[in-house]
Length: 345
Image 1 (cartoon, helix red, strand yellow):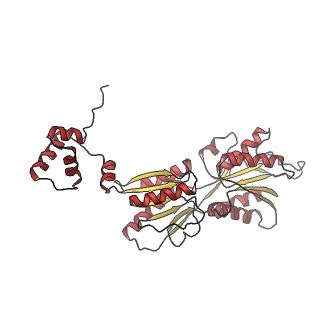
Image 2 (image 1 turned 30 degrees about the vertical axis):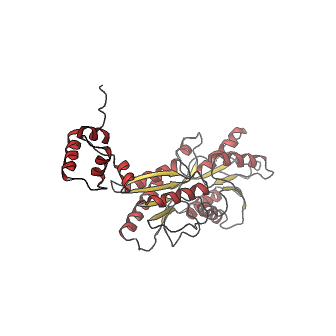
Image 3 (image 1 turned 180 degrees about the horizontal axis):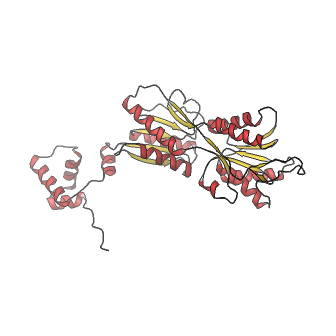
């Protein structure tokens, strides 16, 4: 196969038209007046070379690039799917920039200040901060998935029904006969995690005050692994664990496997997300499924709605979730020496 032809640059245009690069730039951007003859000469050269300007580079240079920033706490399956859903739902011609705040409030603030200077079409934000006290920008902003306190009724928001998802998980664990459960949650004050925990407690304790211990940590696989090791060494025997993310649930599962234990025989585990990893484990993870692409699509709709009328009242969208009953939850049989029998449901 032959080599791909090299695309001409504005330097090539300037050289052929025998003008300066700045003259070509002025013609392309319309930033300063150019004489009619010189303008025609440059445009003819552009046509002859079949030059096509890079719209992103040109937009950044002129300040006329329509772009949306999506700020996420980390690059993972959930947030990249959310960004993809938003990108597909926006009109062609709007560029999406995906940035990672690395789960750091200081970085999040720095990015927010930088974005405000760049004047985007809009900002979609999964926040790290628990409270939102930054200045209100003069462009549309939609909070997704992670909603700090102080944003409802002030900004457009999209989230899954985290309380109902937790309640579905709690009811299923209760119906499976479990009486003593560990909850592995995020730091207190994070709405997403807190709503899942509150919903689980409501579903699990329906009709009785069953035993629950809450362990709070970050939302990672490594934290799930650490808490799993704590559960294994505890005096209390936990027959089930509810984790507010699949990553944490897979960490708990790994801890038990490393100790020679079996899931769900020695512990039942339920997560929240429906990640690909949870489907590919030897014991498929029971989990609450949410739809990150739909969250992205709804966020795009709210951005476009506010672009057409900036003064419209804030909207809050709460999307339904589904409990996926797989293989990591077993029925607790009290006659089995006080252990968690692995009769798979």
